[in-house]
Image (spheres, rainbow, N blue to C red):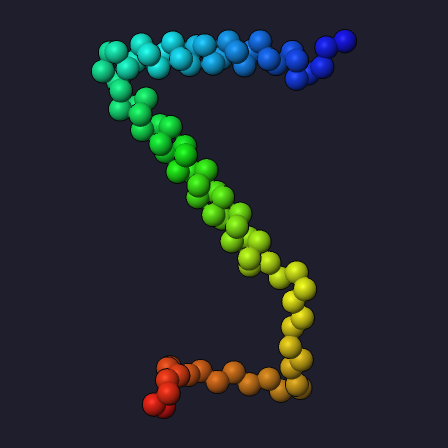
Length: 85
């Protein structure tokens, strides 16, 4: 029995052939900007996604222990904190 992955291979090849044919046809008819800009946008989206995934790992709260707060916590709002203050 063929696996699901091996059954998808002919569809992937056919899809790739159709994409290439359409891209070449559109490119020769003047729609070259779409053929050029779309892959550049996709690469940009993947780059942003990798950056967000990296930030997710850096901003994790795993292992964080919240500080002990006394019975009456107080919040003091400070406008600026400099060496001159």
